[in-house]
Length: 248
Ligand code: ADP
Image (cartoon, rainbow, N blue to C red; front, side, top):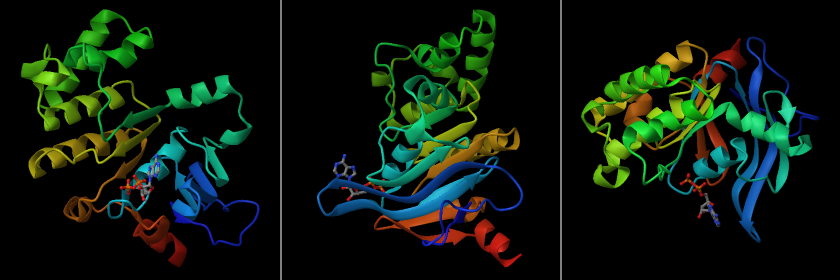
């Protein structure tokens, strides 16, 4: 993870050690004339990093994630993923990129008429995984996130925290190369937040790159991963990995 100096052209220079997986170069996003949700953001996140994205409500965290999972185009600037400028890619190549990304949405986006089991099984079934493996894998993961007693429950019958854990399980079940999560621990207590963080850290250990947006400062302090801090659409703090690299 590193912020690029604003004047550098034509793109952020990769640091030694690790290929860049996400690059934003002078990215601004405006939803309404004269109002910017992101302002001239240049940042690089490397393959294998686990990065917290912090900042107060309205700082631009969700907008930044939306740029990365290609839900929106920047008003200005360029976004590269897996070393490809996404603006240059045809539709089928974009679809291929999206398949490598797991997303935990702030509003969960679960399928209402499916059970917890079937919601979480969906990405595996779409990928053609056989039912024996689907059953084993989904059951194990739902146990890990504390939903073993709710395999057949529909989302509407579950609490916010339970739905959040279901959404996390669905996002991670197929082993994405990149996981983007918007306030993934916003609805659970500290003990469950730490348990979910251990799941994210284990995925990271196995090679997944993660960007976790949160305004939970205590959690960020406890886990000690590098962070990008946004304020009013600008990255204002990067720590501690980028500072350590910059100093070396
Ligand atoms: P955060 O995730 O840090 O709370 P957001 O990215 O959701 O911040 O929002 C950043 C700014 O962009 C806010 O001022 C918000 O009101 C505005 N914004 C976000 N999405 C939209 C949208 N779809 N239309 C108009 N304004 C938006």
